Image (tube, rainbow, N blue to C red; front, top):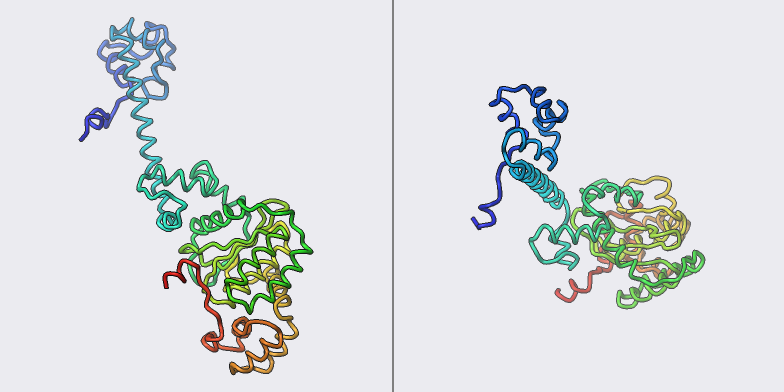
Length: 364
């Protein structure tokens, strides 16, 4: 135990308890004491029950009547106040420690967003800065302010704490971009050009995707998924004129990647001002169906993929031939056929291209 710890009181009593003992020793009732001390009976009662403090003025009256110096009474009150403040601080620390446990602290440290420390105060400061809130009490309000339409997964567990961190990591990147005002027409034209990039390698398509989206006023960011997020992408609006698309590269296959992009692009094009977090295996509704239809039309055309699906293709050659005809990577066609249950999810996956984060690819 340090010297400082030795002087930290582990308990304290309110000065009202001492006052009650003095009154009883003198054989007075509270009403009698109140008259003698020139205090109201209510004030005496509330000091004794601890709901009112001993002020310097009251301490002087107690000194005159009871003989115990005023500084002792104010000292008792100060000790009590300090003890209560410390208790509140400790209780808050316990609550905050429990609150912190819900967040992916280790992952946020690994990506450099939180300091490499075990100091809960510094961790709390960093997390609050990421979330953009003044304290844990504002967490629910932050979630509500996003007004996110979440296409929840049928399987898997999503943590709102982890999801909010992932969203805010992407938002930080998006806010650092200097972009022109959103141009819907230019963005739709850009999506048509981006479609032609599906057959390219990542080192070719990624910079061009970013260039096209940013030129049309759409902030496109790639953000590694966090645990317990089960998310493919998000489309939302930072303000009335700044849409953003955030992608997680979940599943790391090109069919998921490209479908996610065009699905989120659909939300930006069709559902202005609405925020979405999407899981590809999530529950559908009319808004999601609209986005799916837009993405499908942009990628290949519904009539065209419907006609091909009715032939029940089963071989690589059939898929590759069709993909060449429509100018798409065959892995995307496989994914669309699997989604329609024309192909089993285990079939022709070798036609899909695997994608990865640069640091993971370099380490492989």
